[in-house]
Image (cartoon, rainbow, N blue to C red; front, side, top):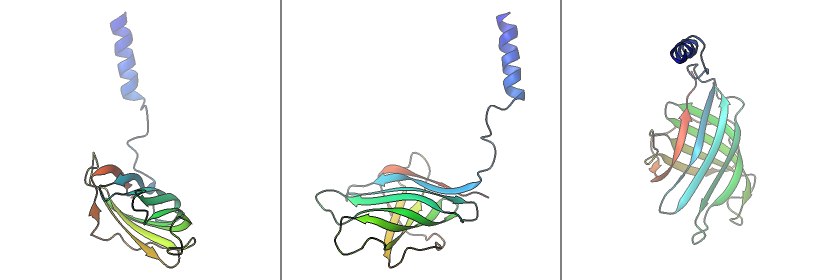
Length: 156
């Protein structure tokens, strides 16, 4: 009886899919947190429609308390994903660095997902005057970081 029930359950699982994990992704995304010994840290949680429209999410970047050069928090304004690379743009909503870059300024980040477990994922950031509304295609050079993981998803 137990074998019959186990066989029936196995057959049911083969016929009825348990999840839609085989479906292609419908959104572009870049998310994760990386840190290094510099020490700096970047956290991004960005998602958009497959064509890059309707970008949304948040980011923060900071350095250690011993070297507080960067400490910004903001909202994602654009996302452009190509393969394992993404350009993420954002508007700085809070900054602990007086004067520059000010709140309301923009930032662009290049993030690179070099696979699991993420030990050599990379990023590069730059300030922009205004928050970007359209992100440029992802570049080719970023600094590798030794802790954390980015996940970049490029929807067809």
